[in-house]
Length: 268
Image 1 (cartoon, rainbow, N blue to C red):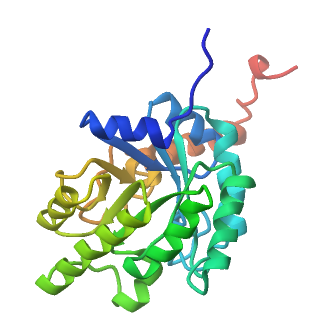
Image 2: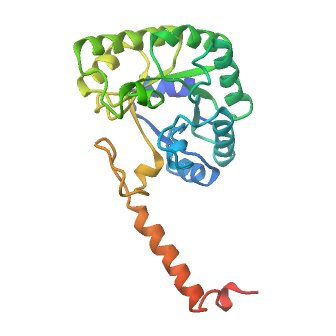
Image 3: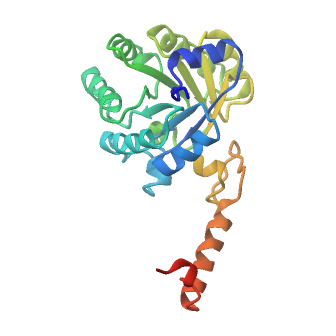
């Protein structure tokens, strides 16, 4: 039997050239990584969204390099096939290129990721170039970038004006020329996402960016419907696991209280 081969930047590029949609989801632990792999998802993003859905923060800003490395390493142990992208968290690369290079290196060396993702436009192109020259595969992220939530004044659609749209296209071109191999577009108008997709020659991955992109990404907990109170416009719950989990826990509690669990079948 042939060994399972992990998705690479090369194989994802071939998928893009075949015009096959590239499917991403976030993941933060080995158990879910195993299930994501069973579903044949192409790319796992160990996102700084773990600050929201795992750590319980209101934003992604408190997440550290050590947090991402820890969760990336757990994901890598849980799967063999998906390409793993690790987020570079807030202030791990914004201060200077040396910090960014060290943080990116830690994601690959300690976290066992295959790529890193950074937020921001042409201002960060020199850093992207330096990372790629050092042998680090980089994904870009434009549109609504959660690390800039306070600058944007909340969770707001980006690129709505002509000037803002033109700048985002310039950002996409600059990052592509610097060497990114994929580009996430978050919360941007669908026509702008299409314009960017038609302009660059790399895969664009949408989240709230319409269908004229080369793939999609959603947070795993949103896909599974683990929080029915959280449903922004671009999120679809493909399951309703909140009630399933709560019902299972209630059944467990009931059987323990009634002394019907553990029965003989579950006792030594």
